[in-house]
Amino acid sequence: MPYSAQRGAHFRAAIDEPEPEVSGGAGRPVLHGSWSVNGQIVPEELIRRESARIGRDRQWLAITDEQERARRLRIAAERSAADQLLLSQIAAADPRPVDPATVDAEAQRLRSQRAGGSSLDPAMLRRFVEQELRVQRITAEMVASASKPTSEQVESFYRENCSQFQKPEMFHAAHIVKHVNGEQSEAEAEAGIRAALAELERGEPFAEVADRHSDCKGQGGDLGQFPAGHMVQEFEDAIRALKPGQRTGVFKSPFGFHIAELRDAIPAGPASFDDVRTEIERVMYFANRHEAYMRAMDQLRSRADIRWVSAPDSTAA
Image (cartoon, rainbow, N blue to C red; front, side, top):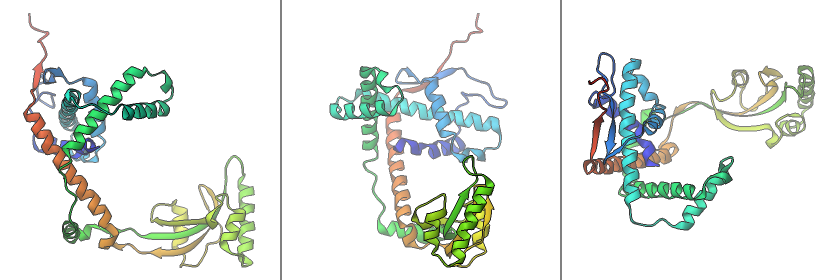
């Protein structure tokens, strides 16, 4: 959903536009109270959930002071929770009905996915599902004005940022493996891999030997293409020493004993426009939808009564 895109925006807002000091911080007073949206207090549980969600963004690590990071994350979480509450209020007040069949289908899906789902109160679940569908409808309408990038915009973005688009080093390999585990001792695994090696040395096709002997049968042991760093170090070191068409002898990794054959090695290098066109289109369209969402959210906030409600002073006489 577009709402999830707000993490980066909340991070930038917390960095660039400090809010009033309502959550405390090093050397700052702590003001006790809560945010209110149209007279409804933002639940602390919602703020905690938003803090956990937004905090997964690694950009927060740019704030090295832990107290300052926590303070700014709290600001972002409070803002996000207030936005969610506002959307929920607007969705609940929307007089348009939600298709009952859609509600029933979604409720059934949730019951089937959740352990003990049959014990959920049907009426309560339907109310929850209907509200979620209302919120989804509102958010979809908020981003409806977002346009997909034109071909010219996508090509221009690639030209301006082509140095950032790099293809990783790639390998295409096949293997035969005999695992060392609770079902097969090291001696048994080594005996099995050496039997496979003997057949290869007699000139039998790698794929046929793999399908007879490997503990990962199928596809003739073909692993397809994979980037450097994808396999365990022992495997990558072994195939790096090969030229396409060559195979290793027996070598060991944490998984057991292997024989590998290198089919192809593709060096790292610049990605062509065709390589990245689809991804650029996806990211640019996502950015357009996010901008449309934030513009709409700003308008909704401007019409809402969002305020800080101070808690009574418990120390007062």
